[in-house]
Image 1: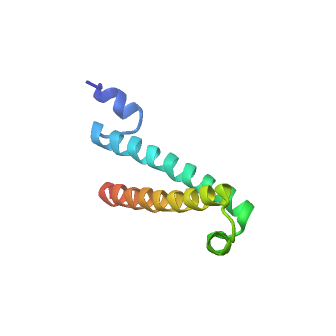
Image 2 (image 1 turned 90 degrees about the horizontal axis):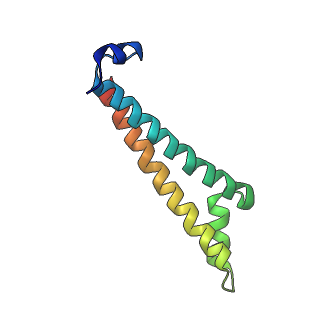
Length: 94
């Protein structure tokens, strides 16, 4: 069990508040990773709408384009999920 003195030295009132901070930090890391993936794709394609337009109008099969389209969609869905989870943690911390 964690010593209360250690928790206070680290700036926490209790183990629960320390746990919430740790979870929030993990979520922020996930948000950062998703955002970086999206930014790399933006640098290559401009906007998701531009990529989507190209994806649906491309006349030939393009595996890289397929992969990038699916990766961007997945990254955006994950980003939305993690941002929602962070809002919930922050709401519970208040």
